[in-house]
Image 1 (cartoon, rainbow, N blue to C red):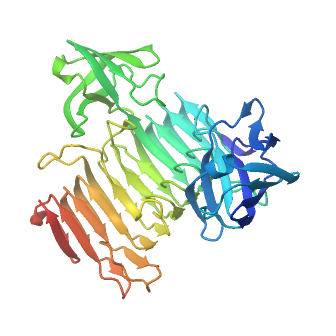
Image 2: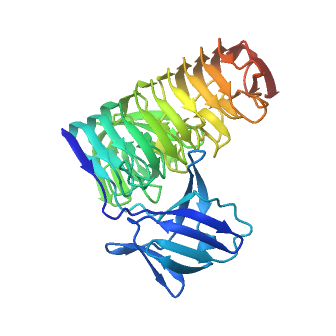
Image 3: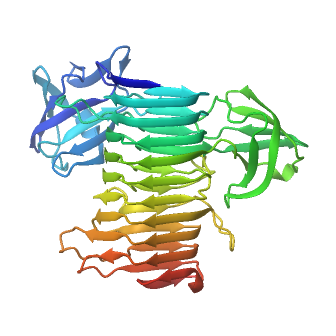
Length: 471
């Protein structure tokens, strides 16, 4: 148990600067005192202890809209810099085509994730309580192959009155290959360059099969070098095109032979035809509860969750997440983050002004299966009830390949420049089964509709106008 501590960087590995004036040929900025810099031959360079910024991954914070959006530092790198006084710099160049405004804050970092804010590895019964993480470098608080983890009143946000807006280089709370119970209660995140929460397993690709000996490989360039399987683990063989299980077995032995490959000895003999398929660890998935928390000021998503065990997301507030506040993915071709959801409840949450970077204001269920198999969905048993959505024009729900999907008793309020009218479908449903969209309320000016594709009419029960766009 770790409790009642606060953690900060004297020099955060992210630099922040606030625009004070804008003209077509010059922009003046106030550099935050914590963001060390030098100007050499008219070029600004950010630095810290033992490092200098080499790539300028830039996110802009608009304090008026409370939004973080992707931006570029390229116009400033092409300009000439003049230090007017300490921490006040004028950038002289061509800014006529740019849309920067006084008050905007640029946040800049190298994109390479070479560390993390905290690391929980191969541990059991870990509790973090009443902790302030004022800044974290890398991938946030990472929990990897650990069991029973609770975070209570863990706050990832800049110190009050610090003048900083960013608190995390990337994710805030990241759970990779954990099991037991994961509890996130009464937490708060504000100012991250990536997702507040990500819960997932890891697919490894089969590169060789010899009877019951299987060689598997880490496929993503940022994920490798750890034991992803252990003796007696239950595993599944996954077709990466469909994301469906084609076989199950148990491990007799698991060996990390180098940083990128493992050798697995299975109880059952596997055919050589499984080369190119993926292996999923069924043992290491957690039961997840995320409740009573607030997630704000991120340019990406709010919660990414893929776990085969029971998950509950309730009584949270998602404010100004740039992309989907909740994303249920599963893929075996890009991030290789597994697995399928089998029991997910999303209830009594508030989603406010989210999805402005992804043109979708709320919940997206989007497994990356390239091939749809009749009557076999990737995810199942997802219930979305009693939530409040306050959004701009855009879909509230996007769902693909789900069996048993409920969207019921939710309230949707549209806020836009045309008096709360909604001109886009409230939901897009693709290749789903046993779907219920009932008893949801909308503003008086809204005319909700649903787009449906690759589904039988008998699989949709709704009181909203629906359009079948294709079969």
